[in-house]
Image 1: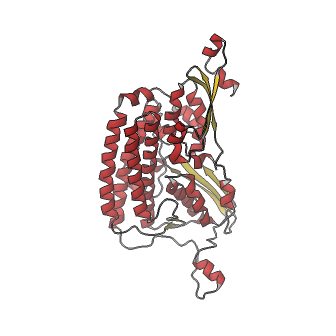
Image 2 (image 1 turned 180 degrees about the vertical axis):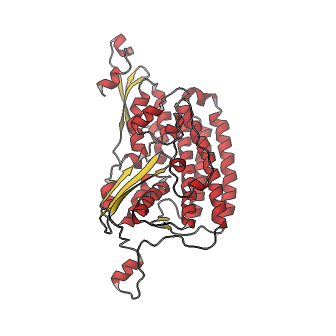
Image 3 (image 1 turned 90 degrees about the horizontal axis):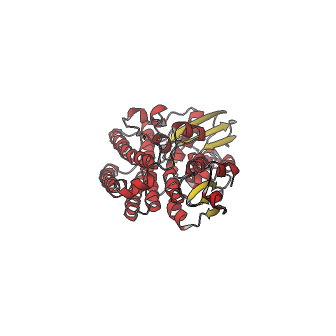
Length: 408
């Protein structure tokens, strides 16, 4: 525990009565942590200093899942990095794949086919909905509203099912490709989306009734772990937490990518920057994502036949020699022109971006990932000092610390 953390609260109960403050380790194996973080990796732990039931300091313990992500992807061809990039997020991996591909495609000067643009955007929003429902499920578990947890889990499963219908494969199936996407969804996409949309809207309404409208929820979240806009910017906090503080910052609208400039959607914001505002922002964002998916599905259905993937410089062999077979199956991948590029997107967890450097070869010269959960983990201690011990897990759930992003 740092001295600064203990001094931040001024006179303490421990000092008044002459006993030592209590230090509690809430590790990844703790039942509460496991239930709250089971769908996002669950390798984060906490060391908490307590004065009575008030937290005087919190240390966030990350790194248990560290795997040298950036050096791993730098040692393989550009396209093979996607299998590792997808594992930055368990439910939101598609968004990380899109961010990486957009950075590489910007460097390569590639223009994406229209169908690929709209399909990627629809997949990103379906992934966002699923990830937000996972966040809501974790919150309901943390504040002990079991029916809310079941409802949110059903929403996550439904959104993930839509994503699987689009990609034809479960998560980490490498549907996102450099230059576009691997395949066109089946003919039943429109029917499946119509069914899923109605189902998700009913689930969201049930969650609002069971959790958002529950007096227990408001009493547990209102006024807890406040952050101002200035504090968010100073600590690198982005995404729903920044918008809950009152900043209408959303890269989909502010710096449009894919086809977001063609879609009308609202950016919800809060006023207090507390846990209750974070919850309300996430719920509103799910509803807006459903609107975006609805628009994208309509455009996709109206597009005629066309390419799904741009050419990044590969060649088709005319004879079955080993090097040409490797090229045909894209085992060596494309050569990316020398230079550097940075591309951030608005992921469900916040600003997720990649900085890529190429020396003109088939291997990256340098790849740097800006993962929002890493910054949110660093901001957590300041948010929780002076709060009650039972505010720890609801705050962690709403910040949505994804272990794949924290431990790279």
